[in-house]
Length: 143
Image 1 (cartoon, rainbow, N blue to C red):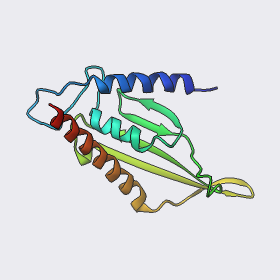
Image 2 (image 1 turned 120 degrees about the vertical axis):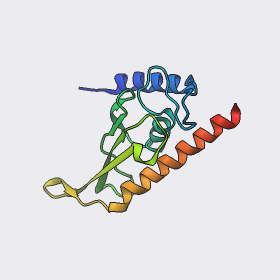
Image 3 (image 1 turned 60 degrees about the horizontal axis):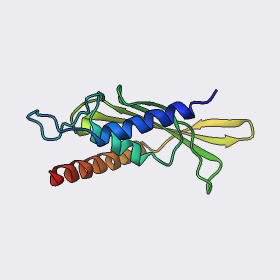
């Protein structure tokens, strides 16, 4: 069973929607919701850009969920990582984003769960938030 055509369609739709997003007339300048998207478009786009090197398993722009498939760096083939990103708000806020990282190492018996440095998810969250702020600033400067 393959999800690649469905993922490609969702990604294309997401890119189109995020490109057409209009600024909300809310009192919050950091709120940007596309008419058909239930989450902050800056956080969504920044999450997709930050995780663009990982294969996607599930993408839900309406619910704000990005789940990657396992990714192994070619230089370290005995380790693989998976990420879950949840965008929890329509506003561009640090508490509107939750990232979980999972790691497995290859053993003689197959793949086994391993511990992930607690700072890893926080670093990815910070990376996404930084990129989201850059996207927001670029949009407001263009207006």
